[in-house]
Length: 439
Image (cartoon, rainbow, N blue to C red):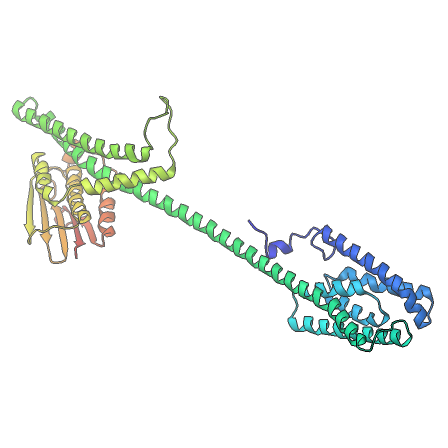
């Protein structure tokens, strides 16, 4: 994570206003050199001004030491350098001060104004000094040299530090902007990664729920019929051997069908991305299964279940299996049958299948009516049973119930934008109704 903004302002390790000790040492060194320079230049200034040499040296040391606060108060440093320009002092302080001023986060008008004042002051001092030297005979050049020397000197001491400071300041602001942008992008990527992980976890949970629902639909109905046939087999084993043999054959057929469907579904899970393969895994060990691979396997299993699942064409066989188990069930179809989307046909079939399974569990022997209606833009189904003839018959069969059948049916129907209603009837039975839109 990059360090910008408030984090950088709190990451100070230097003394006073410096961010780092290295910056403090640099400014201290520059201030020391500037103080020595101004002290040396204070000697001729004291002679020309007619003041004690010690006063000129002390004045130079104090003036040159102002460079120590260039990062804190760059305007003050430039103003001091302009003030001592007539005394021909502080050339290093003027150059470093202008550079610091241009590189600082200050309005451009202030930078331009102070740089202009420094250039004008240097030009005037240079012009006066050159005229004095020519008048005293120190220089024998023409009059053209005075303006030339004053202009070039003022530009040479002002323009380079200002331009360099502007460049460094712009580069510093650009780097700061890039750091902030990188920091923002890093936070966004981290947030996106967290959201992607949450979505992946949610998708894996949804796929696990879907696989569990498919396995419940596959197993519950057939196993319930097997239990009913087994109970009937136990009741007629001695009285009617032929019927007992028939019931035993039905139990075997349904068991084989349930095992076949389970094997197909588990085979998809086992082959999905190789997550359950036994390559490189010793007996008794549990292979490491990545969560992403589990989600992929669950998605593959769900897709396989959607592609190979039952449809409405198998509804007659479903009703016949319940009738073979001893249930009195009547199927009625209204409207003209047509083809629907695969999800719609599977959902309609599963609703009827789960409703018949619930009748076997809770109302064994009750007369049941299965109604299917093909409408213009929807398909409706209803499974209604009368009260069981013997209330104790359901408990005698001892069919366990997980309580998730109605919940699973409701989730399936609502996922397709349909309506699901279930509840007891006035006659003491139970009714399951569902309507699924089919544009």
